[in-house]
Image (cartoon, rainbow, N blue to C red; front, side, top):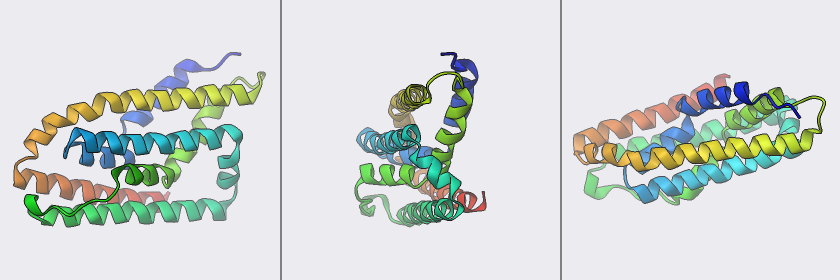
Length: 197
């Protein structure tokens, strides 16, 4: 079995370091506290595991092959990202001592990842390109999916604790407000880009 590991890992690295909805959600929670960041990251990782499982058994390919179903996933995902963005903008207007509760952080991370069609399409476009066409597809898909989840888990394990330094800076009300406005606007922009692609 000759998997194209080099090109696969390079492409995965590029995808990983380009900020997307998961990154914005995790970082905006991590700067409020390591525990919140870990909960958001665990939610996102659970979503990745679901995507990996679906991609391995081929169910996600059915959604990608059906334009109506894919559009529905994109529309729901975009609506949810926009909702998180507006909630973040609303939080930026409240004084630090009156911050509204943001609900279950794990669930937000899970839904953010599950409703992001770009994650599903990443599994469907990246993994098949690295597979050996002469070998059995299921073990390869399972292995590559597991590596993808593992690489992202390692990435978040490094990133979330480092958000503390940023969190110290964001203890200043004005800085925190600007950061939350940027995160909220970024999430709404990402929602628009999901619909546009």
